[in-house]
Length: 379
Image 1 (cartoon, helix red, strand yellow):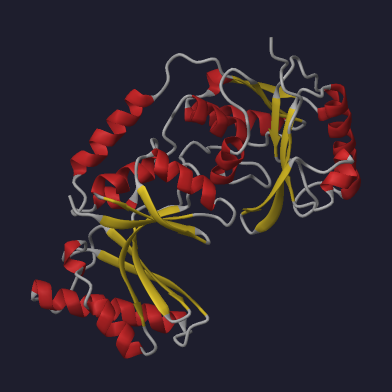
Image 2 (cartoon, one colour):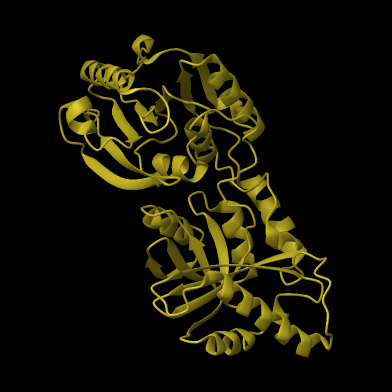
């Protein structure tokens, strides 16, 4: 199989998590930078990455990188890429692009030049003057940064956060990729109680259950590259079969998901059923003020309402007071919480977090606050 340079794109702040996931799959990372991790693999690596990466946005194949100061340079160097190795005669070519701090700043013009260069290359290869583009989708991305051009093929299609289990939605949902990262950045593991008292449509509890049961996040969806001739169909079949066999069938997973909204809890339950993890999660319609922490050393991971989207400031400050009271009563519990509120430490907990991290929920900048509970005494 061919050695490929593969790029996993990531939301700002999640690069280290995605890098660890790639290394856990057994691939060598050659570069980690803002919002993307480059690593070496083959066609099977493309398949495994799409099926298994929980926190990445997309899996791209890097086809070329070069400097271009003129449209002619962009055209010629794009045309020099062996497109016929990837795109068949009937392939549907969809070009998207970005340009930052580059002389070639017109994105529509860059996209047009790239598409023209690909077509010219294909004319020479396939000895044809016209292409129907009725076959599989080939998403080509041209990225210009400081006059450096990177050309990639998108193997994922829809973003990787679209797992396929979200049949019901609620206001202000958290992205699945961010929810999975919050769980992986916490100290929660199978055997400990996890609580999300603001579960909404259930994303955090569902992602936690999928991690604990070792369910591949991409198992229930399709990817753009599944229909490509260049990636053998048997690889998808083999890796899906392996992913099914890798699921844990015996587990001690205790997750509680609660929300003040009955409609949200109903949506969360339906989504959990679709994801196949409803047996791991106990659902309750309950406000935080009525919540009882039933055992020691539990973990709360949550995305409470914040002013930018739902709820007003007074309601949010009431929630903060309730969180503080809960954790004063239960010092062995750990709290992992995201919010846009940069004053959460003072307003809510009255003390700095043990760790904080800047992340993004969609386009909203959020802080991920981590408060560690007392450790169990040895002996």
